[in-house]
Image 1 (cartoon, rainbow, N blue to C red):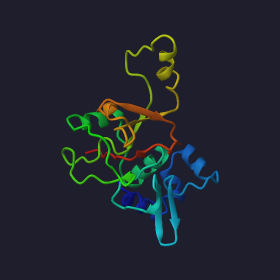
Image 2 (cartoon, rainbow, N blue to C red; image 1 turned 30 degrees about the vertical axis):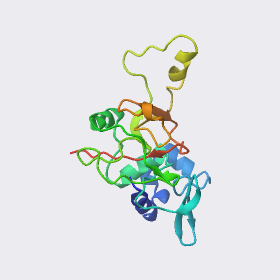
Image 3 (cartoon, one colour; image 1 turned 90 degrees about the vertical axis):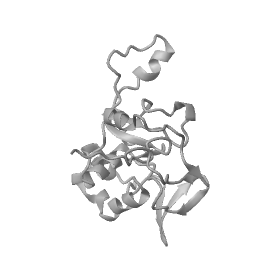
Image 4 (spheres, rainbow, N blue to C red; image 1 turned 135 degrees about the vertical axis):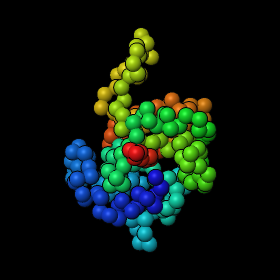
Length: 199
C-alpha cells in the first residue's frame, strides 16, 4: 500500500469507525494515545508530513506506507474490502520473485516502479508486510537446548507474522521464507500492508 492509499483510509474517517477495528484495537484507539495516522505522520499546516531519518518532510503519496501496526493493517484491509494474506499465501505469492534489498533514497523509502512478478510490487526489502497469521512454530519444530532454544520458543505468544524484510534488514536475510514477528500494536518497525482478495 502507498501513503496515498492509506491517506484515503484516514480521510474516510476510519480511525473513528469501530466496525473496522478488532476489539483490542478499538480499545487502544480509545485510550487517548493519539492514534489517528501511522506512527511518524504529522498533519501540519500545508498538509500531511512524515518523519524520516533526515527529519520531517512532506508526505510522498507514492511511497510505501510504513510504521503501521497489525491493527491498522487489518482495519485498512477491511475498509478496502479485502483481508491480510496468511503467511503461507504470502510465501507462495513471493515464490520466484527476486529477493532484492530495499529501495532507500535520501534517507527515506522510495517507490519501486516495475512490478516484481505477475503485477506484484515491493514484495521484498522495502517494508515488512503484516500477515493474518499468528507467530507459531512450524510443524515438527523442536527448540534447541539452552539459550538458542529460548529465542524462538519463548516468543511464540500473542504476536503476528510479518514477511518480506525491510530497508534495514540485512540483505543476506531477505528470502521468501524469512519471517518476523511483533505484537499487533507495534508500529515502530518498518511495517506495511499487503492485502489479499478471494476470487
